[in-house]
Image (cartoon, rainbow, N blue to C red; front, side):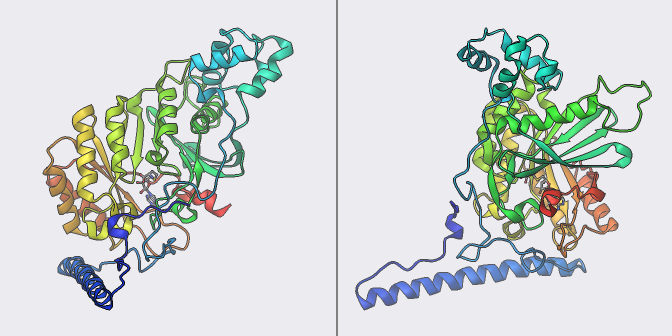
Length: 449
Ligand code: SAH
């Protein structure tokens, strides 16, 4: 396991010394540094607590309550950028490959290149991997071709439906036994799928269910895409929503993707981007979706945001900020120890400047933790300092994880938080909590399995 530590996370170390004098000087320096750090912490604590008090509110801290995060030897939450053990990826699937790569693979099997297109139509347009249904392929080789091009990636373990059938949550088992979730939601005029990008997550945010078990491995591009293809198949079979007035579901398919399921997409950059390319590639090479309908949400991995900015695919970008002050964000979002609020906001703003795409700021409202009026004001100030019209804020009431003592903000507090942002000129939309009754919050279904 590779545990990343930042300069701020490195405990004060005393250099090895030979002379007693040097020993003494070094330990004096270490003690001074420790005292300074403690004083700084205490002072920050006072700022947060006194501001809450001035509003007649309490200041709940993420570290004092709720479930226990994995901690390193230095007493800091662990960040995990790579898997704990050597893990293998699933077999290569048609969806991992470009059309040319598919043709090359088929040629290796002694098959003509045009078969690649036929197979791609079956998968990306008819959502089928069943050799029996592929009557345009030579009968004696159908089974073999399907086995090579369509290894089984996702096995359905559980399906839960709510909101009159307009929300469907899937729990999938992968080839190695890992469990991941996706959530399908029908809205007027669009169908959104919330996809997972990693098995587990290494970012260790204390309020998120996925973070509790750590990271098992990255998902392959095809595993990410197969969530969409499976959802499209379910829709085509009539598995989403009640009866439609026009009597059919044929024309309906997933139109929007949000990378807000399990995992940190920018920590699995290459495979996620390969999947995104396949989502926007024209059919039958890919799904022919619009990049604007794809939202990549990140905890704030600044180098990843910069890479995404240069990528040239105009996806929608969302930053999970959850606190405008480093004092609180350091505890709520452990990766803030590496990239601070202002750095993450600068990177988000640069994304807007380069792509012209308005950025979303995600803000889970947690009672007495991050929902104070002064934080709404500070957030508005920090956003407006970078310009107008480049950003909107999406507060979402916390969906409490099992065993968590934290809860979502009171309605009047939520309303005031939004009011303060709106009156400062920051467009703000409260996100709905679809699927709350079916453990909609990230990773809850997998966690209870
Ligand atoms: N790792 C990425 C994407 C996955 S989480 C990210 O952090 O953005 C998708 C969103 O759900 C994030 O904004 C995350 O902070 C939020 N989230 C996680 N747990 C939640 C909970 N219990 N209630 C509400 N939102 C939650």
